Image 1 (cartoon, one colour):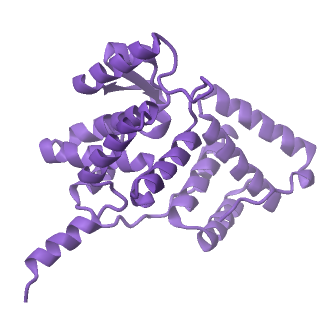
Image 2 (image 1 turned 90 degrees about the vertical axis):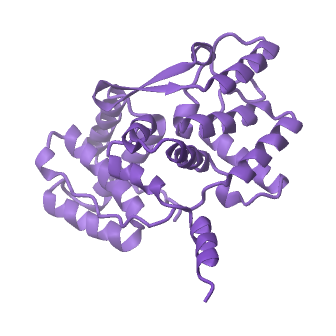
Length: 284
């Protein structure tokens, strides 16, 4: 569902100032640009619908969201409003998330064969920026937002530290074979510092830039676009890791999951693998 313009002109000057302070508060708390944009949109949307920030109005808003959106979107909006409540120092008004029923299979996971084919095509066509982006995502399990934080200096060290809420540190390790080939590429590019992934203008690549290019490559190389997206390579990493090492707690730490229950989905097979296995077993 596309976002529509909100009636900001109907908001009072006091409300607009409150939103401006909320934006500054989010910045001070280290929220990303996309998160700030999403949270401001949600707070503005709520304030355009309800006259006051009360628990009853929050519950009405939650019901309205459930009627209109999928559970994941509902929870994103609830998370934004709970953050707004924290900003307003109204923690007792927090709203519970809706329960998500986890599917017993993985969807949109790129196969090992398609991953190898994609790498081969990117290397053949000289698309080294995207070759290494795909390879690093599949070899480390980083999210796309984390991928774009990698600097040349991190690759030289062979590791990168990510800081999350509560001053928690998560360390990303670059496998030696990935590091060595990436450093050769950087040497040929005569680059010793700065963002690892740059666009053709020499500026850091954006998340949308990578997503859009992956769609282009999927069509160019006759791959299923539904499995050629940044998160698909994170899925591939997790599946391959759990096949080689059954330490799910370690995988949870590597992926940066807050709960090990989130990581358990990688114990499941993909829907395609389930169907293939089913066809092998059921012969009556």
